[in-house]
Image (spheres, rainbow, N blue to C red):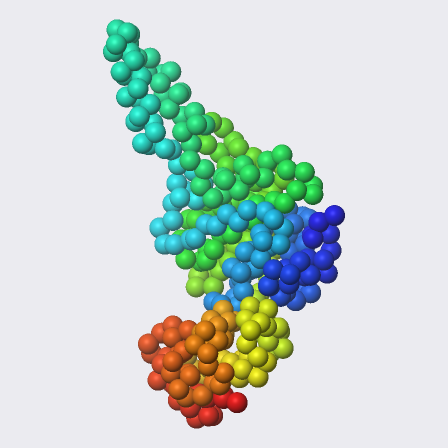
Length: 305
């Protein structure tokens, strides 16, 4: 028995580690695991896409392997690279041994030695594939988080296709490294660019909405249980007003968690103008949002109790 046997069990295990999911998302996660397909999670920043992968790893007991995407991401950072320093050291060792023995270096043999598996550096995708090899059906799989894939260029989508289609990585010098038991792969995107259709077709898909008030209250109570309910409600109410305003970066659930934690750490039990001023750095992430946010919050009394 594993937590992926049914959506209800999965939701319970995720809540145990502090992550709440709707029944539809729990079902999609079970399908991703059972079908061996990646799960593409799209939505605004701060709505729980990345934290889902972390929670899946914590709840299942499998390792979390994270690939943070960025512009210019290369295969050597995502798939594999060669340990150049170790190769140079090996060459010098061979040269020293050959020189002392008066022998010539066999160039072809040396090239084979330098491209042995011992010199290969497994980057996140290859590491997840290798760590999944030989796992039994009830053993926890690695959770591979490919975070903010939309930050990488279109060429990275093509790079992923072999790995996600066949659960394999081809190293020309060594051959193809593959697994019959795929890792659980979570891809996240903030939709700053369109992903390649071929990549989308290989994935299950989940759109992440901002949680409703009741769901967000449950999330906050799990993450900041020390804060009382009235303060929690005040923070959610204020955050909802900010989300309705014309902000460049409206707060997600991650920011409401930080806001409530900041209030609790400072011993503030009311959300009034002074407490908002003291903790606004926890919820707003752009200087251009400060003035309109203060106006929205002060115009309604700050949401205090």
